[in-house]
Amino acid sequence: MHHRSEVRLIVIHCRFRIDPTIRDAWTESARRMALASRAEEGCIAYDFSFDVIDPDIAYAYEAWETQETLDAHIAAPHHVARMAEVEQWDVERQQILFYGVEWQRDVLAERAAREDAH
Image (cartoon, rainbow, N blue to C red; front, side):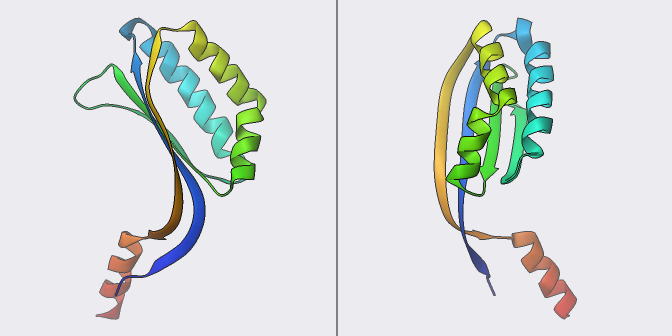
């Protein structure tokens, strides 16, 4: 049985091309940004990663409970500082997508419930 929970949240997925010479600086900046953002009210997820095929591609993944918490994040000092850092580097913004999510399924929880039932 599938259990879809009704949710209203915002998911953000970004793709960047990072010059190899700033990879370490990008990574350290992203680590600081993720730590600060995960502590914010309304933050469900805040992750950065690199592509497994093209190491010069970086991704950001975020999920926020509401538009209000996302707006507060965008105005937060650590976000403003991060944007200023990124502006100094040769970063190509290839994709920035916002998704409004109306439902979600926790497939691992469903699997665990099935196993517990047996």
